[in-house]
Image (cartoon, rainbow, N blue to C red; front, side):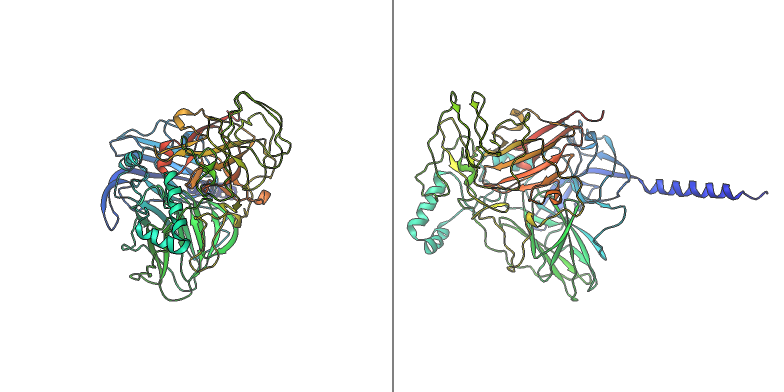
Length: 610
């Protein structure tokens, strides 16, 4: 047999190497969508899960890989999977009636798209209430060059708020009574305690004020009575991640809850935040952090003692808590701390509602003993008026200018509530307060919104603090480690007022539910600045599909890049988006029942590559 020429050997070796590389860069994954039984510790229920398990499926991809995902629907109803935070073609995004038709019972749908990013993400159903019923999982994408922040061990910590009721029943009960699941209503004992701290007269006036507004300062979580879980396990079931003392452990925190924000801490350990929503950030060491619904954070901890450590996740409203464990060996459980006192909303959290209430149809009165930061003025009908130029630096919000002849504002700040689609307006930088809010011209009243401290209203009852008195993570602490875009002025600004009617349990954007609103149209290649004005008493985690959200923290090109941004009550927050994806996308509050009730928009990107 003649010898093989050296050049042929080289070619053969190269072909084999290329084939091996191609095999690594193309993965096929199979997922089934099944009816399952969920054991939440205190109760059991039927639900929906992936691969017949209440333990979340973890998909592990590599950056640069072309993935094929075969999703088989074993339910008796349509289903879908949305790949939360992934940048992909719009027809692979998995939102019925926007990007595809959904997956029929008994059918298999094949998703196929390239992995163009790295980091921690998650996936979930976008059909009905299958997500709160258990249809969620995790995504971990290995970067091409390996992780910048190295660790010896790596765990997903996926949080959820499993409720004994199915999602459809919860929504039906909320529509019947918005307070149906509020187990934190004030009682006589609360009045006695308040009288001791603020005096009987002030305590009674406080109750009269909240009563006139038909609201409660304890209404922080719409849905209470849930069982928090870590990776599908309750506190008693005790999810455990192992370590050896001195090792660095990476925890990929994911909040896949339907409604609950969580405050996360590990008593005895500092957490170094290295990633937010899949994007690397400059490391920041904290004692505790708040993770909004749909957000992800990667943290690194280094337990040095040969003992168990508790991973504690308390709901923001302090109605529920789950504990997992980091342990040097199996069979150990960290201590379960007492839950901290429940927070209460304050008038600062109501500031956004004072202008047109943010609760269509409610009227606020000025005789309620409100603080000077809430100044009521009589309703004014300007439907036939010519308006002079605005002066000062505050932006005027919520005015219907359809019949007005308005001169330009005297300063560069935009007049919000106007359609700026043809304007070249780059609004003020970073989150701000002090805007003149809520000019409603149908007989309601106006109010001056309060100031902000970072991303909370000044004096908010929701402003977090660490259990040990140490450092609590803020959006202001986040800086992009590797900016994705050059910093350039926005081509226009779009105001999105987050509005609702709590009594009727209707949630909306700019006063309109999804069914009443026209799609939001963006132009490929532009940079759009979004101004979120929260006129409700609830925090809203806003998620734009298919494109990154640059959160304005005043750092320019180092502003953090996220897929979900929480807008606290009574605040105004600015973000920017480079419109670099064609097609149709969803834009919505990620609180499941708020999205279903109408706080949702369809986005159409016009132009771009065919």
